[in-house]
Length: 561
Image (cartoon, rainbow, N blue to C red; front, side, top):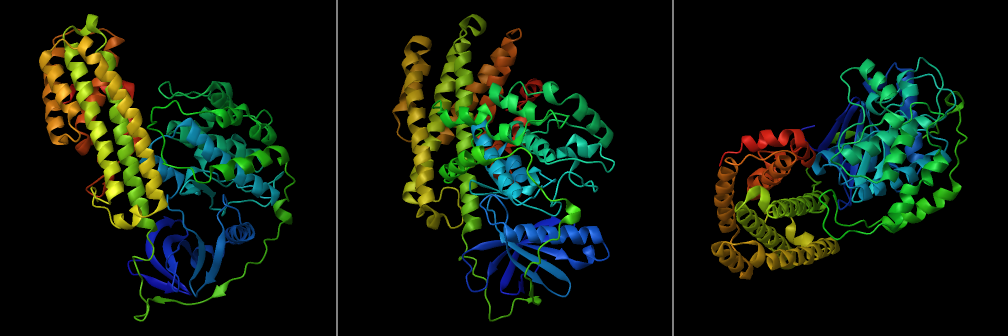
């Protein structure tokens, strides 16, 4: 749809997705354009003559209209025209989890557990309504602010025990489905799929990577359970590993039961866990506004959950009739206007994403500072170059602090430093103040870090020139970032040329390369860690994958300044 159009009382204003049976649009009510909706268009021609698809479609309508819960996608209105069905649903401002993770990168264990608890709360509601999903995947899980919403019930089955139609997505499909020839499987198939999704959220990749269906079946059999592999450079708790192993058991009989899932020690661990103080680059959001509600519901579910929910067999299930509005679709009449300023959701989403990106960028710099500062402690390896390392760490720290201060000022004074649409309106919101508070808290941590670093300068740096320059820039309230970058570039080039003359043995070499590569990207953060360039958004997951240990040497050797 290139042109906006009117369907019933709704305006379809922007295409936001495409599926096998039609497209998804962002829409608004004609009379109240402040709230956005996701409107799925289903082509009738795609369903005609196919009894199975028709039944699944009716099941989806029945499920989504029947259940109204924060973690389940609800059908607000069902419309029918001559050629299409239109499903009006909740609009999730952060999109689906697959796209979200691609943009944000893998999430911290704490945040992953927060999302997992909501998925589990949603499934408790599905089970209480005798529903099994059977196509759980990141693309079918949506995010509205910090609220997880389970959607896409086209393949949901109103029953369990015996089912004869293999449906779902192979990469998250349970072994009993992958190897099914029409046999039986239970609600434990969803436990497996949830485990795969949880693994993806934590590690940014699937647990079983395969190029063919047969290879996937083989890896699922041989690399699951106790043979499950974990990325060495991603630290997770032993409780988290245990839960993943319990969820991803090849034999469904050995797979964790639902009650044990809800009562697993991992959730107790995170109910008591406190931040270690230093900002975490894997945190993807500033605030969890629904955290108290999520925890309260999860606590109740721990008591009421049952292992084998009494689900109805699909052959006995008759989907409830959903009220539908017969209407027409047409071009928007001239007397009806779409007010782009009425709904600020999309603008606010971009602003939120931009500030989250900048936060991650600064945290990345601070990680680089720590890595380079550790190199400065190793005089026996690098000799007088420890002066350069310490100087680089101090100047980069000042750059990060300055960027953080600029962000705080922009939210306080409404100075639109990133030229973002509707920024002034956003600054008047409570959310903007909470984001500012988040950066304020980081500022205190970074300043403490800076004080600790500067207290070591006199005893660790022998170069008077470096001592004077560091002292000068630290005394400046707001140094010029371009000037700091020029110093960093000059010192980085000198250091790299000197390092080329030193033979460093492993494992020290990998530590050095990691520090220098992180430093390089921090120096050229504006260019390398862009928010958006040539229509493309920066993907933290791709960047993180590029910085894997086996690729760092190649990156370092190809650095040309």
